Image (tube, rainbow, N blue to C red):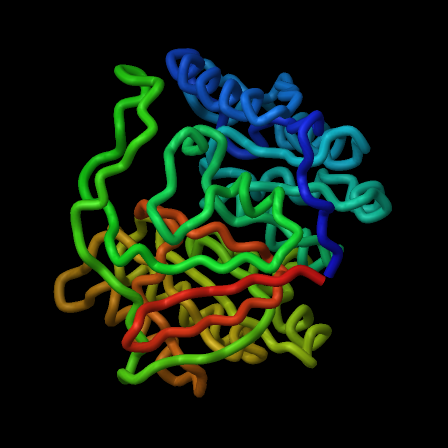
Length: 338
């Protein structure tokens, strides 16, 4: 694995939308997020593929791929942080200049949700690490005790240790049009990580994963060969992490079954499943979907981990060597680069 160097003040951070752009009404929130980066000493560079009149994609797949490629290979740009995810980052994959990106010094690509469509092949094709954490529009939110801001992780020389805060947020998303400066989340519900079958867990492996709905379609393509990545890292094995964004339990069950049958979890030392607010189906819950599809694996399963589409977001570096420990004292993950 190749890791970007830690971010430093005066580095440039690029902003582009390889998936969905933002509506003009969200520009005040975008400016709040960019101002936070500037306050930390960064030079923020906005691309042309950021704003979409109706909030959909900003341009063609070729246009979005060209701008993302240009930022990833620019030696002055040390991180690329899209405003948010979306639906069609998959349109970009075949148009990226993979040779040029692979020849460049690694740059942090930061985000989650549909952006994991791009982050996974950076690891499987190029051995590039990336940072699964809050998108740019979420960047103004403060992290709860125990978790780091994605900037703190990108600035670290590693290792970094994070602990479950033991609480999470329920309810609707904040209205960024009404209050573009909102920066606090109320964690109103208790919740801890659960090792299926009970007991504790102490395991190490290289992190890889993301959003189930967008990664499952990459199974069997040149962009999602996780089994090959696992074999190349056989000395360490993998800690695979997955989370459901919004699809129903039946859809998630089918996707996870397909990923398992394709060998996605063959090199896994453990599977971490993020907390979700996605809907259950009649007679089939999200929990049952995970246990049904991944129960046949002979590896530990950990449910309710603090990443994904339910706040808080635990930043994780794809490719980092992770030590995951869960016991009666709590749950924590330590990540090391190199």
